[in-house]
Length: 66
Image (tube, rainbow, N blue to C red; front, side, top):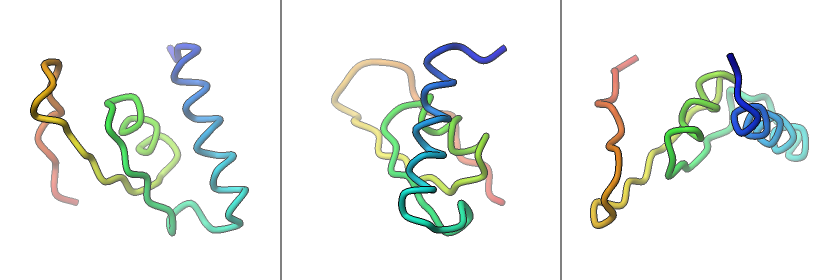
């Protein structure tokens, strides 16, 4: 099930890729939220995660080497 926020994230990522006229595999998102990371995975985009260790909140899972 895709939430409205997730759907909006996916739409935004796809629109950004179309705007720069580049293949999605050549794009990288700098994300600071788990929904951004998940959105990247769904559209096939690479992602760099920036996590603020000073803010309380959920942690990102450990990266899985690919």
